[in-house]
Image 1 (cartoon, protein in one colour):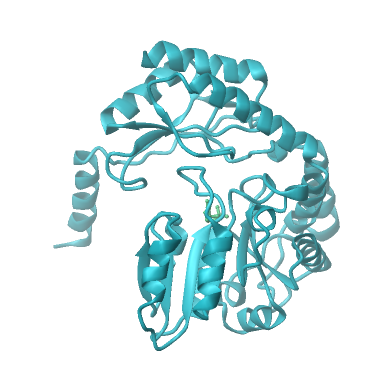
Image 2: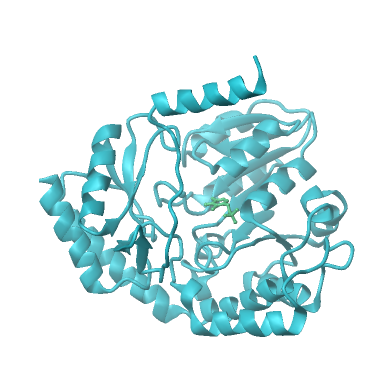
Length: 383
Ligand SMILES: *Cc1c(COP(=O)(O)O)cnc(C)c1O
């Protein structure tokens, strides 16, 4: 079979499975609104939970950073791509989260890949919540370590795996807030069991950081848990992009030696690191934004409780409505779109079979009238 044939065949297969993915040009978004094909929609599918992607002070900081440092870092952090803006941001993140060190990565995806590749060897094992993000599960699957998955948010299921012998080290992997359900991991219980077995815990808090806990310090802080490894990302509540790994001194030094995504890749633009410092300050003083988000959540959940669709146990910005059937989910999303509401339909294998859903995300940028409109259309469409 030729390359051409192989590619054509894969595309045909995708089409036949109604799983073909297409991108649409976003002609302008304010967090609250989105323009696609010259039509304006209310946006209920972004991850910009606090609306910071449009924050005037963060935008100004990026401009100042670009004027001061130029637009690119010019190399990997190990060569000349590590500036005072990067160093200051790392220190501020470490201080904020009460961890000895923070190391910046270009994205959460890269951070997870780098961590699992650098830490694990053939005798080791990774025990991951089965609903963990693709970047974690794929990194673990392609690492030399053995991957075993435990039942979602079930410490007993983790315990069964921990009880089995392992000649190497064990890394337990979970998320602070799960991206497709919006529910939270029982971090204290998981950490206690991991520690008792001599294992380390890695918490990916992509959806919790900035949104939960004092000063937005995230799920670990909120639950009073200090995992050995924490990943925070800047593409969601921070409103920019990038990520950081929070860890001990020796782990940070180890990653600087062995994390290939740090060594062989250009570091983030210093202007971005500079803008992230401003976003961090806004998050630390962001009780107003978090309260607005909470009000929006309360309004949505109250109004959605009487829908014939199931809400999840979520107190976060991610508020999915479980529909079940794929086709029904797609047509619901389409009808919402016809009414000017942009909501994403999520189908298996991104979620378990029979778990197709509307993944509704709320932000601090939404106004009460926006939520009201969403509820009105949902009630008109679902009953
Ligand atoms: C979004 C996300 C990532 C990826 O982060 P990026 O910075 O977008 O690459 C990793 N983990 C989880 C849980 C996520 O939701």
